[in-house]
Image (cartoon, rainbow, N blue to C red):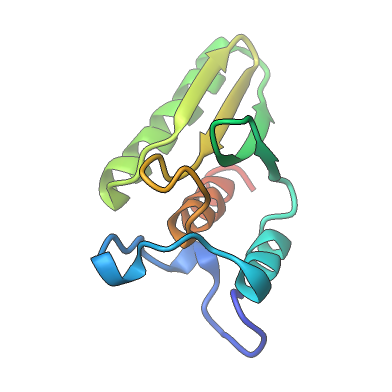
Length: 118
C-alpha cells in the first residue's frame, strides 16, 4: 500500500505518464513505497536515483525467460528497465530517465517485477 489506509498495492496499479503526475516520489509516499518492495535497493549512481534488484536462477535459460517476462510487462505499462542477463541471474534497474530520479511508476514496475517471481 502506498499510503496508510490505502487498499491498492503497487503491483495492482498502472503507470501514469500524464504531465500532472511527473514529479519525483518523495516524503511519506517514498517511505511507504520502499516498504512495499523490501527486496529492492534504492541507490544513487551519480546520474540519478535508481531501484535495483538481482534475481537468481538455476541456469541461463531460466534467467532469460524471466527477463522476457519483465520485457512483456514493460511493454504493457510503457515503462522500461535496464536489464543485465547473465548465467543464473538477472539484474533489474528501474528509474525515470527524464526525471533523473524515482517516480511512482518505478515502484509500480518494481512491484510488478516481484510478482513475476514471488
